[in-house]
Amino acid sequence: MYAFDKLPEALRLLRHRAGLRQNELAERARVTKPMMSAYETGTKRPTTETLDKILDALGEDVTGLGQALRSVQRASERMELSNNGSEADPLDLGRDRLEARQALEEIGEGVERFMRSMSRVIETVER
Image (cartoon, rainbow, N blue to C red):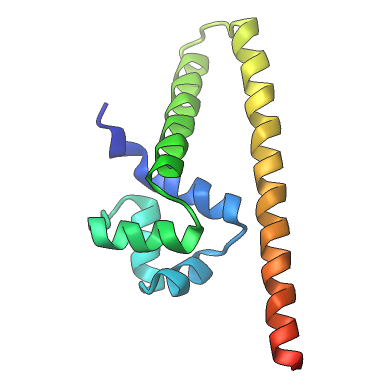
């Protein structure tokens, strides 16, 4: 499978981790909301330049994108296995729990970053 086939899902994952709505990310990345939506649904692919803007707006780099792509790919593979009636390996279940815990921690960190940035905005406005 081509590595970027899961780009739409990876972009959504990174956006959720950053605690941003689609329109907020679009604004930060200087793309229209319909284009951001098209990138996240896979109906359009961003150019390299646009992808760089999106990653910058998310506070991510290519390494973070690669990790998100791998996470999405693993989740997709696990889903395929479960849909094929295969029994889950207990080791996979342990990894799933660990990945879920890590994802929750990352979401919490994203919320904390968002709250800090909102505090800075409020402080700036109050000055």
